[in-house]
Image (cartoon, rainbow over all chains, first blue to last red):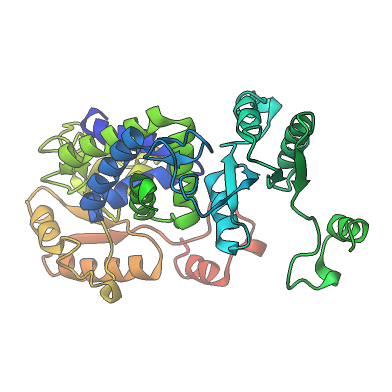
Length: 196
Length: 196
């Protein structure tokens, strides 16, 4: 129906969002047009602003509007420790613990050969340059404990150790607050092997 | 963090979409900025175009870019039958059946007193004017078979019958392809009461 072209185009555009199928996209479009046109315009402006202003930090590769992100530019951070994470959300999770005061390198992804994401797509060369700046003493691999995250940590760890850097990995073990009865076997096995 | 202001604003704007919480919004923003900036700009343009171009059909109240929507303007439709539906998605579901050739009135909502949505918010007065144009012979109430949809049908039906119009409701009964064993009691009771 040609008299709803701009509505159809909006539904198609919303479907490009991750996790949004055609029904969700239709519901979103209906909601915005019927109940929240101001929200629609706000979203349009936010999309324009973010795509034009957000870029990657020259040091850690995370999103920032500056040349160097606020964390990398903070002189109170311990520059001798560098945590390697997959995404800004993972970095935010580490920050919430308030247990780490070092700097970060954000891969903005993970190794996934099947999706064509190899070492160069996650900025391995850039990480090697960053980690061998003479200040970094320890690189903490904080990629996810999924198959892809583990593979990513393995490849990065090998490359960094070849440069003579101290490389550690977040501890595997039983999550805080867990009852052993309900913890999966693999986790308990790791906790046994890494007992201290 | 002031160096990610436009990213934070994008996450906030995405959260206004129905069904999108803070985690989903962050994942969407990350996906758009890291992997699909073209999609982000396309979505921004689609939002602008849809909000500026889409309006309500003067006859049936659905979304259209014209004064009168394509369905209402189609001379091959039977103007003596008027189906009342809650949303354009419901209208599309009826159209897919190819079993109805009449016209529509789209309420763009349903009665929901708790949310402050009364008869005037769903355009009851406009529906009464539309249904009493002298051409409409039968009004088919095709609101959903939910509590709110039933209440909406009840209120609209009363108002239309007071105008002397023939008012019908979509049949309740056992869905096509069902085994009785697995159909809920209320549906079977209705199918028994409305047997033919």
